[in-house]
Length: 249
Image 1: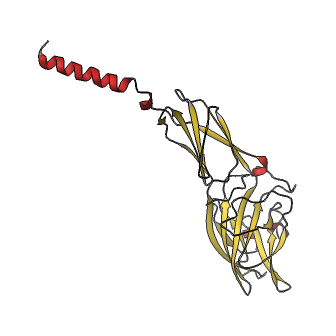
Image 2 (image 1 turned 30 degrees about the horizontal axis):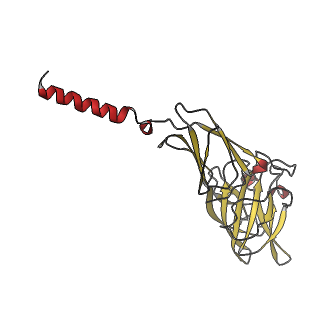
Image 3 (image 1 turned 90 degrees about the vertical axis):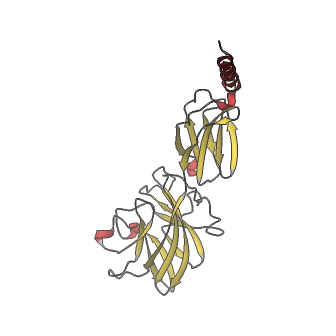
């Protein structure tokens, strides 16, 4: 063996020693995470299969990081996103991410019953609020409408005008729109509620008529930006994950 060959072999051996025994270099697969909404919409229950080589799992939610050695975790803090990583030593996998962000949009409609006016709104499949006209062709899409009654504006469940919607309801929220990070549990929602400008309200959108929380529910929050005459302007934040009451941007 020549001197050059020997030096080359030593370099390769040292490189193998330096990397082959370092557990932090282990490549971990990202967990495959499934979730279910529990606790009347207040908790996201996570489960995943064990990741080969993982010693623990790291859950990031609501600005906090927690660790578990099990293959499940209950997230109770309203969060825009939840991430789960497999961990071994100082090595971490890519995250499995559950997107719980609200869909924000604005909508303008009129609080009267003239069929030529857009006087109600509903949420489309993307979670955006869409103004609707109160006639039969729009009944599938309208969730709420407004009516000016006794000098005040009422927000009303669309079941009052169509039998295709039954379980929608509204409730006043305490605090600001941005501070409303989780809708209240069901129990004190109403199908008709007087609304005022510069106020925030929770919405429940569901075909369930029992008045109890259901995994078929969707929750939202609305800020009444202005009421000018019979014109109502809203900012809406819609949670696309069914049953979940979290309302975080």
